[in-house]
Image 1 (cartoon, rainbow, N blue to C red):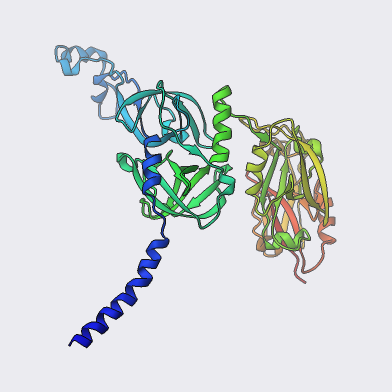
Image 2: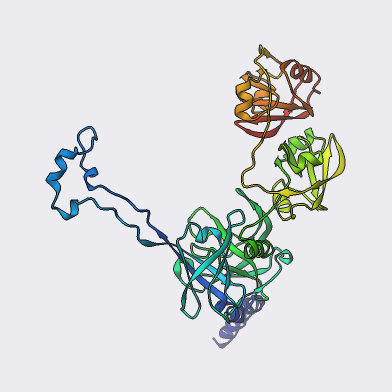
Length: 473
């Protein structure tokens, strides 16, 4: 019996040793939390309810929805609940979020979406004081907002360099999920420089840290206790933290904060191109060894790109010496260049690699294309692509802001249909040649190589894109 007990204890020790060794390798966050948590704040916003000049008689309607005639309204006088009076707006809670103090004199960083459209912003400090904050400035494109509270000698975070963040390192988030102050969650960095839809100016840090509503605007720390990001978004199918969380890198956030502090707004660099991803077929059609880069589908008029000589069909593979692996890599790199500075752009054009220099402009609030064109309808003819095309009318040119091209009026079975072309698509370039009129289009089609992908630029409902087209023998 004693022998059996000894064997059991021996086996138990063998089982516990790896567990103990593994647990010793896990980081200890206690000291980090003690030092950093006091600089993390809770942010609540209130919004004025829109004033409503409600006429109570309006709720009484006839069978056809008509209003109560004035002649009958005197029957309702004397009833206080029926007297028409405007309902004044009253402040009401709008949202909860997090933030963190970056200087002892009260500057605070959070997300733009936490405080947007707020009438009042209330910051609750770690010592339970509540102070109304001034919105120094906010930037929707980066989702960063800078606040200021009137207080001194506040605890503040140490700002780290997000450019030094590596995939696999431990990180920790502190925030106010669901309004619970100073909640702590930990995880690892699962990706860096991640681009998200509609957020082209932020190369996000992706983590598996549990982030819930209310964590937005809170800090993401490394093991040295430095803030490397602002928790901003989560991708989830459950609505909870079980998903991927994304943080705005502090390098980006501090650049935005510095501009907001100085001017109250943010100025970004602008190149003036519309780009798309390069897939395998497009890479082949443009003579690239592998998919990569940003394919230029539109060069805006009077833009830095046009002045530098960029053309539709160019594939941008490097910007200022940095490789462009995905098209989403380009916008945030351009945006961080100061307007007026020069940038080196390496492109693939007609299968050849070359470098051009562009003077970066200022990103406008609304980019508009100013293009003019003339043309008239022409008879359409079927082609070997299975397409029926015609010239653009003046109305079509004006509606889509297109100078030249041919519009598809019918798609029959053939390579065009296989490529995904539809009625109404405007073909503006084929195999590197600008398309002006139907006769020219037919000539270019007749010269296309067999069983080889070639690039075709189209404009579909106002959006330009390249698609690979392949003629089969």
